[in-house]
Image (tube, rainbow, N blue to C red; front, side):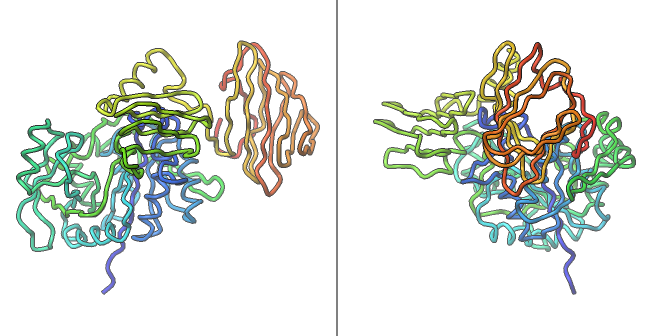
Length: 475
């Protein structure tokens, strides 16, 4: 008899404030290339494709094209559900369950975990299949390697008839002494936040233990709309109904109350990449405990110990005579922190947000559905950008009220709509877009297009834009 398939569901939410300045609200850690040249989401997609290539991603509206691009690069075309607002894991999982058939087995996984052994992970999931098919909500726990205070714990009970273990209790992130006691007890696992269950089981559990979340999500899904952009279908639940939903994790909403919960241990390598210390552990240490990542040619240690350098700013980063430091360099922000304060980085972000610093939320280089732009220089009445446009892509047909623009082609071929005129420009050619002129930039070629844009005017904000036509569903 053929076993029912397991559909992976990737939860792509999360602001990633603990990995600032590399991770920011506009580009959280799951979308940042952290392991080699691949993002955590890309690695998660590739790992879950071995279980089943047809997967579901639940993501924020503002990250929709980052998710679509990741799926495309991995050669997949999954279902993408867009949350109108962040409402934590209970609501996100409910949406995925509502999109599935009642008896479908759903494997819920965070997008930002690093699990290098895909085969060991798939084996673990299979060990939970029988319990999930019998009606349990199966969670997966990681064998702890040290008394961490950063993770919640699961206390294991007796072995069930289906091969999984009973869950005695869930334990919130403990203090150091309690964590040591838990580790010595020998029957606890780190809570990995990964779940396997039937869609109908999850919805029934929510209906019983969090009826308001269940009702809000069902009302939102009843008004779902779908649209297709570039071959990718996006599902948008009703925003008004979903925004009214209470924000709560699945742990508090369901797992601590549901009667039939099982756990399966995972003995392989795992990291939630939840701090810069965790990121540093992914790099190879030298004889003095120093580690480097990013642009390795620009990371230099001299007479240092236990110092981690992440060089992403395209300039030399030199640590001299330091110890126990984290140095994270990006083009527009630098973080220097003692390793003992890695968990407090989110406080830095909160302080910068209170100061209305754009660097708290957004990178200098910003991803767009058509490519990217990089703000090279900004003054009172001017801004200089590098703009990259993907082959076959185009910006919206638009107009600005307060600025004019000069475009210079650096590489590739540009198709420029400038009022009633359509021009083809190649390397070293340029054009001028007057204030108030309708215009569009497109790349008709087979290679990426890069231009330099010089803006001048009384107001240079991104909200000074009137779109007349757009290929990406923006208004």
